[in-house]
Picture 1 (cartoon, rainbow, N blue to C red):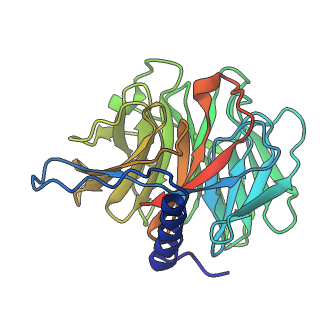
Picture 2: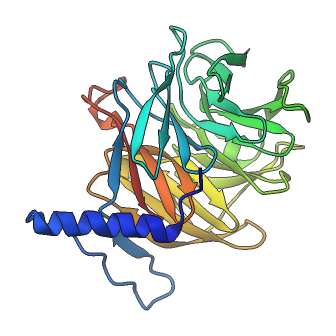
Length: 323
């Protein structure tokens, strides 16, 4: 499969807009960009949806090979596999009872999928060729640890805990074998525990020497040193109700679920300050939680947590928008 290109996705989105116009549907046009550099652009993007058939909830998403994506049934634990270009998805892994599926990342080199287990205090590693469980981890007792999101570096996988100021690291050797986990205690401003969801989304620089974490309750972004656990604030970019984040180069996308938007942020070279460049909105967003990047587009999961926890919506989907 080939990875979705910006031009092909834009053609798809244009086609959707044409269909909407012919059907008499009103589609909001993007607001013009402000001439003031400090004022972010606000874009209303129509987007398209990919339904997760049979899902009872949703939360995490990961980019796989080419246009393949993986998404999870939050409270059911099942994993879906889909195609961004084809606009299709189907249940891929029927998870054992009692598992959750939140943030996830695909290790395409070794055909592995790392999944946070949420309130179970666990994390899981699946084989993306066969769907079998390669390994499972218990980072903490259920109810005391909430394993929320994960990022991959060249050495392994880092998981956040939304109830404790801790990160968990699972090493992956050169043969693709996950090893024994270790725990890193976070210090500094990111370590403050203020509510039910603290450390949440997580990303890493390409060399793995700096982690970037989102703090949901504080609505803030921080860097974390993976060697010492020391954290520092990224100034200038408040992100209220932030959930998952995506990092590419010096551009960061922050999903703000209960605001039904994704904020695109430009970071400086030292990751000490950022500036909001664009606020992505869509009438298709329904409490989005996490996102994955495919070229110039984002695939964003509708968690629909505005309906309750667990949510009570009748269907769950991925929304594909221009990033």
